[in-house]
Length: 196
Length: 104
Image 1 (cartoon, rainbow over the protein chains, first blue to last red):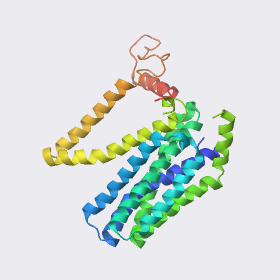
Image 2: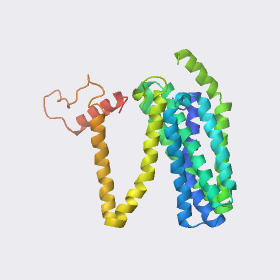
Image 3: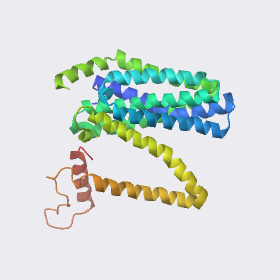
């Protein structure tokens, strides 16, 4: 169903972009911090921890204001804002800006994960939920492998900033893919039929 | 997760809370591991990790219903000959149950 249903495919591609980003970010931040910002290991650890804080804050906010979470537009917005935040992280020149950019980036990424999962669960029949979830997990794990390998090649050839810029481009393309793929319109029609 | 939804926004709220729990464990896990390894050693760190899985299982048992499909037998049925089921029979029963149980 994931491959034959256009909406499921678009949502799955968005999830794969988010998964690839999650796997690749630690490597990219490590190289950016060590080789380009000349930071200590403790400072790099703080940058990575800021991601956890950003994600946690957004999760708690999302639990409080959950109404827009089952809308495809929320996924699109999260991806485009993540793209902007990853671009900002690629351009930072100081430690504190890196902490802020990574925290904000992970906040948007977390919002994307929550909204994507919610949108898919709300529109997938219960009887095939297990199979869709299993296929999705398989594809996400493959995306993680490809993401780490891809960012490794970029880091070796061009450095941390280019790898983060490529990450931003991937997230932006996933957002645009959801818009161009017509997933938002499909979801609105489905939602209208089911009276949600 | 879809079975956890209750009222408008319930599914999104459930996913958000799940993600928040994930975030807390991602922040707290390395900190607890660091303290445990520093105070007690790496072997105890792994032991605490192992115990955490047992606690997860017990919590799941405590808060989730024992049978999602009450109409399905919770005990393994005997074979048509009345003998104790073999490994093939057990595997087939498990596969059939898993494939029908949306929650699982």
